[in-house]
Length: 490
Image: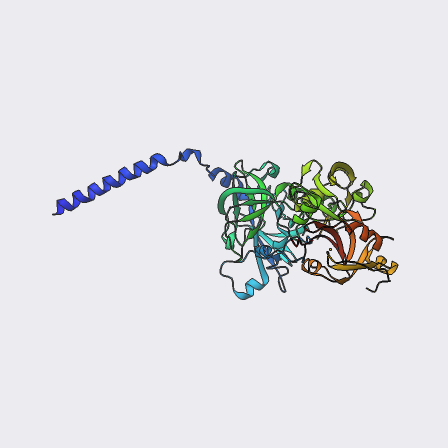
């Protein structure tokens, strides 16, 4: 009986080994998979644990990342953008009091004399910042400068001897599918290594406070405490700064984002040289090329950015860019969506002359625009929409009536003489369903500038059932293209 059991076990073992052998024959060559040990051994000493202390309430913790302020027909926030969260580091099993006064993150040393790069949101408003090195030394760090727009902070420590540093790579050469790895302190676990691949590059998240960053998207697992840590390529060079995750829980759900290292190092050099980061300014307000615009302009697709307003005396105005133009490319780079434009403009050195390709009245043309410097509280590209005197016109098909604008109202809105008519009343469902309101100012109809009631009548007289009339509408200090499709009763 005993021998029989042994024989049975032996037979099962042999069958199992045979199955394993068959399975192994189908497994890819292990030698073809990357080995990250050399990268980790070389670079881990240059990665630091960052701890920020606050005497009062932590500033900016748990701030949500909302969609970039581009106008649309109700101008709602993107509901998906509510899931974007900065991931602030938290000590392992912290007490409530420690959570209230401490934030943890990661960083990396970029110079032998002690300059360290991390995220601004890790150290924002901190009263004291310390960093811990791999050799367990804890050093006080001075915040040299920050740029909240790029979410970059430059720290400096004084240490005896030459500190280890990382090698800086080129994030512009990254391609989807490449291997990358992160080193950081998630949940306070120092020098945690995680790996994955690049999922996408040039990812604009449409955020109000970071519209000028085209992120690197990866599936590298990063969590609270990874903020500010390095993202490496297979050559062991830093290609990104780990910054955000896509999550409705605050923890990693498979999608993470890193700031490209070329953007981060540009900010570092400017902080060192002049104490702040400057960005180029084009001087236009824009919106996505939506279905209404595609239909009204008879476009092939919705690529590009629709100009809804041009700032007076800006580079765009001087070059001849006008409301109603569709920007197709900037400095030779095609725009797939409107959100692609702000990062390109923001990285342009002020004073540079840049070719901008536009579509106007169905024809393409290229204008040379001199880029100015945006003020530190001003956007490179704006993204978004009374009592009146007699002179009223109605349009039953469009569902609203208009009146002339008086000079005082034009002045309040920043409009020039002979520019725009005001909606006096909503009379039908077409305008109501589009969200138009009494008091909205009509600036253009189908790319024609409107400055009088007569001009509005002339621009809308040929509107037919089934056609779409595209209006440029000003509401308050925002302008927005809105398409009205006239119902076909047939």
